[in-house]
Figure 1 (cartoon, rainbow, N blue to C red):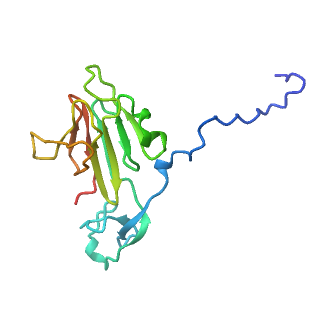
Figure 2: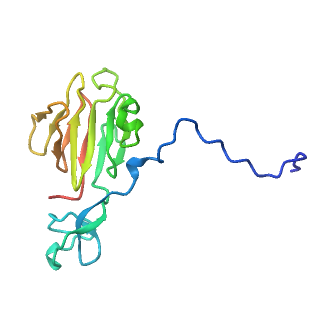
Figure 3: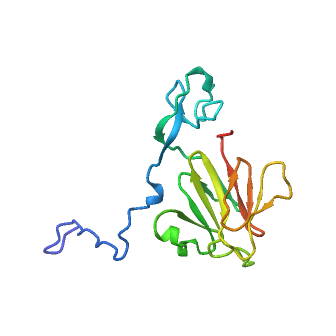
Length: 186
């Protein structure tokens, strides 16, 4: 193909998006926390009995906590099958992008489609604190229930009071929700 006069084949850079001068997903920035390294060099929860990566016993080495970049703490598996890696916090709801923590880049939006309008626009929040995964209800209209493994009835959350999730927990947002899964048992 021939080029029109004055075209070099290179496109000019795209203009920056106005009004978005926040870091590119600050929620994804590496977070340093205290942990221990197994003898194979994998960074782990200091309370772990076995390495989450290679499975070796953490008793093989003198466990001296030291700083390191926090690895993903597991997955959120939404009803319907979508999977989200837990390497940052999330605001969950029908329109989570409206939440101030999302617009500030401190959490990612996780949109849950809901035909019954039981899920609020910004319904719940997942926070990563050290090696813990915490969930809190954001004052939703219909509330949030956490069912830990072995507890069929669950615990209704007090708004804005974080509760620690353990692997296998189910978070019910009123007829729909998600599981927290992780190979990092405690």
